[in-house]
Amino acid sequence: MKILILGGTKFLGRALTEAAIAHGHEVTLFHRGLHDANAFPNVQHIIGDRNIDLDLLQGRDWDAVIDTSGYEPESVLAAAKQLKNQVKHYTFISTISVYDGLKKLNVNESAPVAKLTDQMDPGQKYGAKKALCELAVQQEFPNHTLVIRPGLIVGPHDVSDRFTYWPARFHRGGEVLVPLPKERKLQFIDVRDLSAWIIRLVEQEIVGTLHASGSDYTMEEVVQACTQTAEREVICTWVPEEFLVAHGVGEWMELPLWIQSDSLVGMFSLDNTKAFANGLTTRPLIEIVRDTLAWDQNCSMTVTRAAGMDPAREVELLRIWSENIF
Image (cartoon, rainbow, N blue to C red; front, side):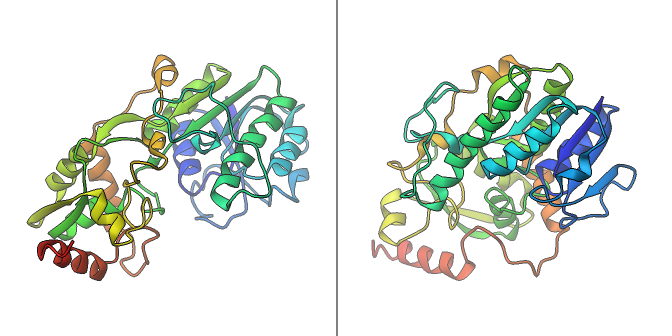
């Protein structure tokens, strides 16, 4: 197949490009050249901004397009209008943040999506805009649109640190602050599994809307996998939610994989029945942890992490906990 990827050199786009090449497809990347522009030297790159340079795509045809970089409805609609006579099948990468009710567990693809309002905070607007992006594509590609709604995507080249923090923290060794409960359900998907699956769906011209939030794990299973990869001695100190809340620990970003029990717990517990029925497979957790750590260790150690607890802050919280001040 001839596949156009909007994006293609950063995280998910990079893995999609690798998967498409591995499947023998001819790939064209349309991106701004801001993230590793030298990647994939044997693939055609069209350098441009999707908001002003769509005319660079004129005069070409592809079997399919995968849109990894659409966040604004107007921008996505413009791309869909440009490509509707050049492409047969449009895959739009959306998000589970489109849902209005992620405090519920086991939400499926038919659940109501958020409606954009001026009163929303930026995080809510992100999901509501993505929902409008989905509609924009479906408007221009009726019966030829595949919408993928991923949850937390993890693995090599993930610079968000929302998962990478844990393998890296355990690798550092010492006493590690870990959030209870041990049995808390988590869902995430390795970017390589997600990408290989999307390419298979594109090959089959699958349409509709599918979750892609991955397999089910527990915090204890994540800790066990991270412990196995650590080269130094690790002591886990499990602390309850009440302690974290009392000391103002930030959910999701300051302490990755932790969210309060009255918060958006549905983010880690979606109904993935349709995805697995359509061929989604996931690799072992220990492999995800090992590969993520190996990639992270090869990165510059001078880079400030985008998420994760400051070491001094962790030491202070562990001291407070040990002295039973809470």
